[in-house]
Every structure is written in structure tokens, then in C-alpha cells.
Amino acid sequence: MLSEDMPYAEAYASEMTLREMMEAYGSDVWNYAFFLTRSREQANDISQEVFLKAYKNVGKYRGQSSMKTWLLTITRNTAFSWSKNSFWRRFIPFGDQPVTVNAPSAEREALGNQYANRIWEIIMNLPDKNREVLVLDIQQGLTIGEMSDLLNVPQGTVKSRLARAREKVKQAIQKEERE
Image 1 (cartoon, rainbow, N blue to C red):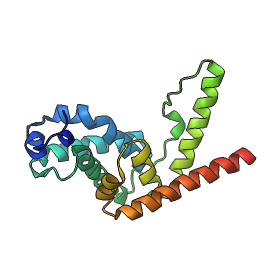
Image 2: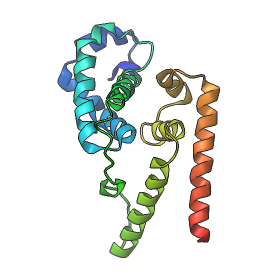
Image 3: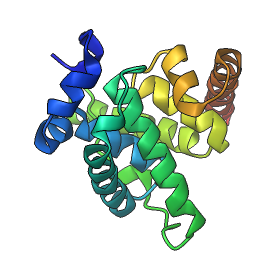
Image 4: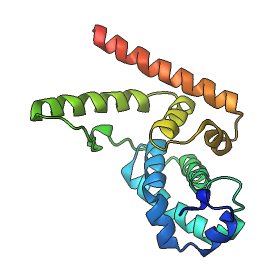
């Protein structure tokens, strides 16, 4: 059982090993780092740094949010610190990301992958604030409240950013379909 399911999250967190933390939340942290940086290499580096920071500071985890939200907050802060150093600003095309599509034929699978990749390209081209909430919603499955805590903005702001992001993606898809 993970910390968000337990009443004594702080005590549980202090007993987690680094390995347990990485196994439970590694893919969430890496995926979020990737969407913030758009670089596999930087996502790897940031993920490692996040878990080292988290493990060193696990005693400071108070259980006010889920362990996942706490780790994603560290991920966000670490990624923004890296962005200030601008040496990592290299774009790796999203097309390299594997996309899982259940399709009965190779042709249908290829079309599905192409469509999914195009949607993610649209998402990745959204303004940072819109892209971030959409990724937290789609990829991480966070609630409005968890996103609000993570981003340190009111829930209404999260809702409006999410609505704007969804609308921009919808408009971009409709525009492409007309062309």
C-alpha cells in the first residue's frame, strides 16, 4: 500500500527505501520530467536527481499530499532549476515515444500511432502552463486539487488552464482535419 492510502504517511515514507520509491513512482517522475524538458536524456538525469533529493529529505515529507504529488513537485522544481541553466534545451522529436494502440491490422496500427503522435505533438506545442496541466491530467492522472497543490495555484486557475488546453488541442485537430 502506498503512502496516499495510509493514515500515517510520514512514518511510512521514512521507512521507504530508495528502491521502493523508484519502483512505485519512477515512471511517473520520468514521464513528467520528459514532458517538462522534451528530452529523454534530461528526463533521466532529472529523475535520478529527484529520487536522491526525495530520499535525502524523506523525513521532511509531512503527508499533506500524496507521495506522488510530493515527488512531482520536486520533479517540477528540479526541471525548472535545470531550465535556468539552458544547456539542456535540446528537443528530441516526440515520434520516438512508443505509443500503444490496440489495432487488428498493421495498417490500422500505423495510422493509430501516427494519429496519437500527432496529438502529442500538438500537446507539446501548447504554451507551458496549458501543456503542464494537460499532461498532469492525462499522463499522471492527478486531480484538480493535486494539480493545484503541485503548481501552487488556485483550483480555479487549474480548471481554466485545463479547459483552455483541451480547447486548443480540439481546435488544432479540427483545423488539421479540414486541411
